[in-house]
Length: 159
Image (cartoon, rainbow, N blue to C red; front, top):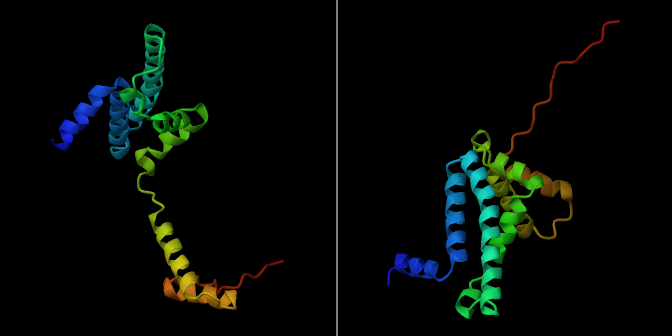
């Protein structure tokens, strides 16, 4: 079986899994394309869709008098539900949409993470260095930081 066949067969097992699969792909596409409107629509639609699924689960339980069948019960996406519930709270939704804004797409914490990695490596290599100022100087030399030039002009007050 190909990967696509395995995925399509797994998605046929549970409506909840199919819904989760579709939500993840829509969110991923919206984030990659920096499409804030689509991201907001997807997150709002998620809440509505998962409420419907929970109602359908309750109806199944009432009708059959037992929990979901084992093959469906084992497919657990509670982590997805918890994550998306956290993202869609009123407090967090504005921050999530702001992070996907194309205006802020150029910002990355990659350079800072690279500097932190180098500093941690240097700390491991120089374990036991007795003087913090020597350690600081070594980090500055190793990362090729340029010292800030002090303003040589003196300000004189005229009274």
